[in-house]
Length: 590
Image (cartoon, one colour):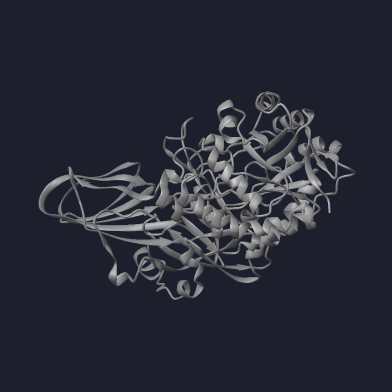
């Protein structure tokens, strides 16, 4: 079997120097039926390797309950079938603009800042995760006839912490579980990041978007020998809801790629094909250089300005990169694969039913039956209610009689809609921010606060922060206690029978609720779901969760993979949290 090693300043395959020309593809952001197409696109661009993260929270949604861990192995097999080597990044933390950086909510909710340290409880959970996932990797190492050449230890740890004992535990754990290929770390090209994130005896790589020579010079100050590698060349960037669409020009990105290769380094394009954060798994960031400012949730599209776009099509950046990479190939590059089938024409999806949000929550929410909704002294967080992605309704009573005082939700994460019912009637209030005022409220009053998570922070010092109402409810200076809370997880909609049995009525005049629509598709293919007039929520097509939509932009439609559609009738569901709008529409790719 081949052997992949580090020899001096080079990687070597069976003793011969080899340069890794890699591109990142996240198997969990691509419909499995389309893996082969995306991997073939990488080969056509001139790459010989693919890089793959493994998201812990996707595969272990609750402690000890694992879901389709074998998908990791299937992707590695698909890469080998496409003629690509593989770099595996199993975490436990991955960043990736993914919910909670890949860490399970049930773990960060319990441990808080003890994660990503030598804390025994955290390490015990990591060890169990490694026991479960690493057999998928170990069996597919190059020394066993598979495609895996490199395995990463953690991910950009120097941007977060300085616990070398934690990193050493991970590296030793990888070796103890049978990983024999070389290990590596990846950090930004800053002294403090490399000092904290690199490990003696483990290859160190750097991550950056420009300034390759300066980055490698910094690496050489810390590592006088060893292969040069850019583990993440940020050839594009991601977008935030309510922000501007980020664009990196192909010529600029190609110039930096040429600079990396001209330095004699290996490279991993981040991203080669970004895909989509299906299922509401998009993460969030905190604004500011120190990542402690306002929450900035990531959009559903993870197109990233990559050379292969969200719909699997080669872009101008693809052609520019192919020109740069071609001289480093062993022979002529294959032609790009044919474009995926596309929806031939727009298809309307008229709404034919609606279930009010309260009825959806009563049928699909938890914990426990709706008739026995628990009462809490203080508002429980999403983590305490075991809600990873979704929303929570808090209900409480302002006692009376009492004159109007300011009512305040403290520690709100992330956005909410409140309904206040008192002697003056009912009013609806949109809430956002860590301290969210509902105005002056007299008692007695009944209040509902529907809180929606916009994605957990995936990078920086506020990684793992809790969601929901994390402070309390203040009327003047007095805390309001006796709070009823009920959560609704997005994966509750995976129960097709329960969703079909909901009490659908006529669409009505709008408002928060679950809307059902039908689309007659003549010929399935990749499509975009356009939602003019809709506010914010999540969308499903034939039971497949496309992710979050939001009128705030900049994303204007949701990608619908062709394999999700079928000829004839197709069901569209929208869990709208603001106001129902116009007619949904499936249309050809933009």
